[in-house]
Amino acid sequence: MIRTFLRRLFKGTTGPLSVGAACPAFSAVDTDGNPVTSQDLLGKRAVLWFFPKADTPG
Image 1 (tube, helix red, strand yellow):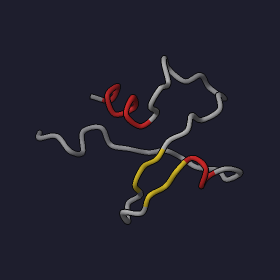
Image 2 (cartoon, rainbow, N blue to C red; image 1 turned 90 degrees about the vertical axis):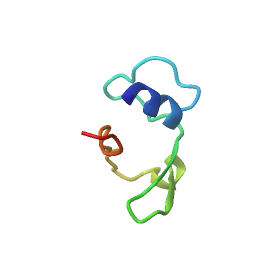
Image 3 (cartoon, one colour; image 1 turned 180 degrees about the horizontal axis):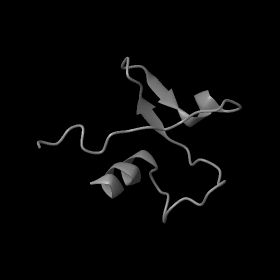
Image 4 (tube, rainbow, N blue to C red; image 1 turned 120 degrees about the vertical axis):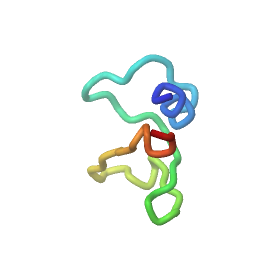
């Protein structure tokens, strides 16, 4: 499930990211429903945080 989420988020990226690697291009929705892209975050510190079990039962 996590792998599927990351593949969809980082389309076209293959393999795991290395520590210190540049972030692949992505687009997502923030907690307020606003779209955010990797371009919006250029030059800023950011943490990509998600809950893989948030939308699953149990």
